[in-house]
Amino acid sequence: MNEIVSKEEIAPDTFRYEIRHPKIAKKRRAGQFVIIRSHEGGERVPLTLVGSDPDAGTVTLIFQAVGHSTKELAQLEVGDALMDMAGPLGQPTHIENYGTACVIGGGYGTAPVLPIAAALADAGNDLIGIIGARSKDLLILEKELGDICAELKVATDDGSYGHHGFVTDVLKDLIDGGREVKFVLAVGPTPMMRAVANLTREYDIPCMVSLNPLMIDGTGMCGGCRVEVGGETKFACVDGPEFDAHQVNFDLLMKRQATYKAEEAEAGHWGSHCKIGLPKDK
Image 1 (cartoon, one colour):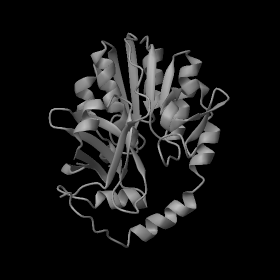
Image 2 (cartoon, helix red, strand yellow; image 1 turned 180 degrees about the vertical axis):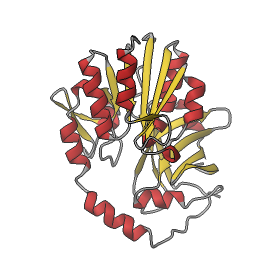
Image 3 (cartoon, rainbow, N blue to C red; image 1 turned 45 degrees about the vertical axis):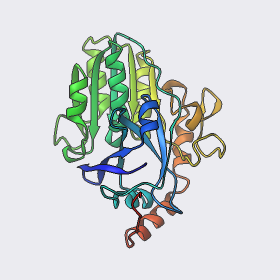
Image 4 (cartoon, one colour; image 1 turned 90 degrees about the vertical axis):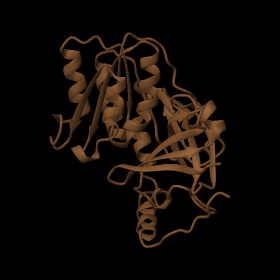
């Protein structure tokens, strides 16, 4: 259980793991996540369930090694085992046939978009995908989303590939060009999701976002992942992670996300100078 059966670096410091966990593989649905610990005393890390193979009993996780705990996770190799993996957690994505739907992924946020895109396509939607990153080398899952979406567009901040600009530029061009987009889902950095929310509000297009606040236990007990949606307090781990983008208080969300930046930087610096020894799952 929890054994890593494959590992691939799909972009600089971005890894795709296939993990053996038959029960989660059978139960997971688009939009849900797990919380993992790589070793005894390790931090609890929430990661989206990007996919699963119920027959093989495996689930797919994608993560960026940017902080202390994810850098520890990236040290694991095929044959090693995670100490804990709890899930599936969170509410599954509401899926229906909207007609023409658009999924938008920014940076690592493209990973959570993939299973939702697959579910929307299976429901019969005419699916448009837009993915963005700072540069071409940081783009992920272009081929996988291209196989799912009827149309896929790419944007890079530096113009090294695709549209030179932001995903919101591409979405606005589509709408202004006459595409009758009926639903948008966006996952990525909070400023990007806020920009998509503002644009879709202007055009009166329903929009959902998957939020990534601070999260610890994943069961609604700690309150660390609380967000304000429609003037009410919600917990992303049990009420979400997806919410109506037009109702999210993004300013408050960004303030909460910045709470422990200094501590995270210090932990990341310390973690870059150490290695961990992890037992294989016997």
